[in-house]
Length: 504
Image (cartoon, rainbow, N blue to C red; front, side, top):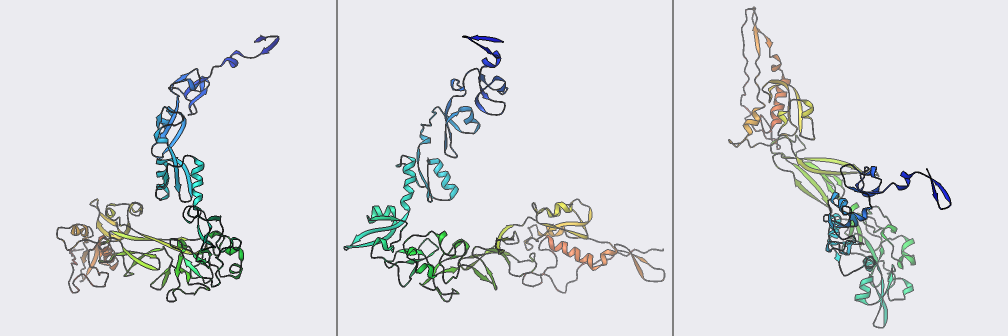
């Protein structure tokens, strides 16, 4: 079609030029409140041939998430509802719930709502530090720099002296001149403090590190007895980060030359003790104490846990109990698992990048209760659901009432109150009872011959049945964890044979 526009000719399509735009409550591709062509609006949702800003169903407001403490401005109500938020008719979120303040998390700060601050504090496991007196994000971020450390120079008795302090304390408490990132022993500051010729060291409360101290007793850098550090003027002038110091990333336990201890790697600052520490420091009276433990001749790292069974014997013996041991600050703590084998101890090994092993152990529930109900080996050995084992070569009555040659029993026999006549020990142990009939044939010339049930006469059958009985709990002839027999040594137990004559 040809149009005359002024003195010009234009060729085009009426449909393309005048195709109206619709406000789709939801589009076919899942977007909410979008301006699009009509065929792009999803079926079953509202649509209008106008802009979304002009509709009531896509009116913009504030979406507040009460769980996360977040506020989203200019959000359509439908979008807010779909995200389980609370919608308010305030596009700029000028509502009490969205009031902002300064939230401090460690050495970082964020200008957020109080609910969001509580959420962040919970995630990082710290106390809530929320301030409403800081009105802008710039003020909030600037507030955390007040904890930066440096040299605070001030006058005392007509002399220039110095304290290592935070910027805030220097300004508000000491009222001195602050030099960020500098040490009091910096010669350029011209104070009474200098590098200590005796190379004294100190431990600081709440920190792992062994530090040098200057002649005024101020904390200096990490203790490092190498000549390149103790004779370096810059090492006594500038604050070095832990990452820039000796032995970073290592425990440095027992090191005579480096005080960069790391508690999580197994060391911390302690006063040197020749009865405990393997090495003496080159200088000072403090060292990175090795926090590992020795147990029965074996060394365990600080924080390691492992399983222990006093008997080193069968974990199913009456009276036996498993323990979880913990190495923490040079000491081994013994934590018993639940008695009567209600819990067992499981241990695994974590191999580090350097090939060293770190053991982790825990007491877990002994899931034995439904073992005898399992009729298939696959179900019996399903360790996600139960702690059982599959035994073959026996003859017992299963949970289905049928005689079977295979049975599922507990991996670790539970402790039973066999002394209690009202308890369930008799019922549980009874599941391991078995009767085997052996038939003999009398020979014409004398003597007998076994013709059926002969397998019951073998020691293998007897041992397998005893294994079933013992696995069910404190059942049968057992020796306890101390080695004492729990039965009468000279008592005769039932062994019956049924002989049938035959004229064959």
